[in-house]
Amino acid sequence: MKLADHLSKKEIQQFNQLRKGRRNRENKAIPKTKPKRQEKLSQRDWEEIMGTGRDIYKRVNGAVRRR
Image (cartoon, rainbow, N blue to C red; front, top):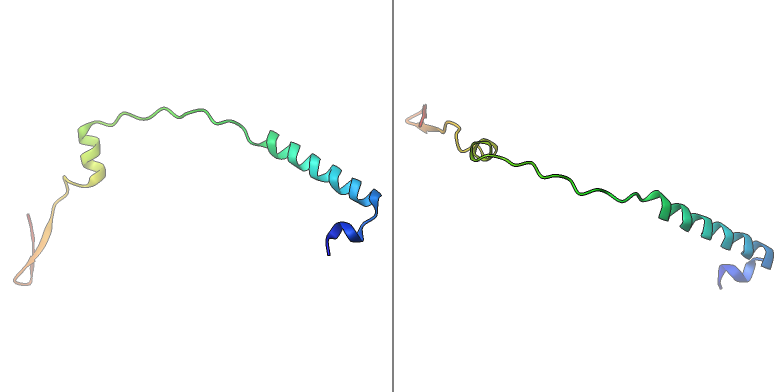
């Protein structure tokens, strides 16, 4: 059985008005976003982000050595 079978015509109209109002609020609430400017990174910045310039440590005969 559907919900509408248990409601009167007046209650169905009120329900439909609530649905319409909610749709209108949802459409207005979503602002259009502006495209963000992308930051230009240099080669050095990318290397720092990736961690290619860091020291590498390795265990050799129990001692920790730096490469």
